[in-house]
Length: 91
Image (cartoon, rainbow, N blue to C red; front, top):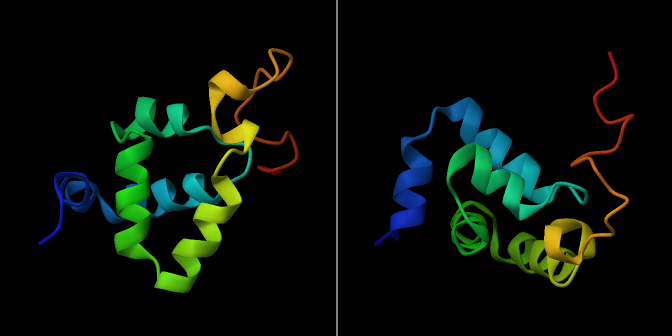
């Protein structure tokens, strides 16, 4: 039975669901940004990723984001004022 976070995630339009997953994978996007935009805190994002990814992919993602300073605003350097790399969204 899916948890509440997964149910809230499923209510999002498909495009926004995709964006949540994309933001979760991005190294420079903090969990706080996902919470501000979609109302899913870090524990919620973890539950969504656990549900959406294959087990090996989920383990890889968890290993990657655990303790990563850029994924947690409180751990970031105050010099970082953006949530993504300036070259990420080239036009």
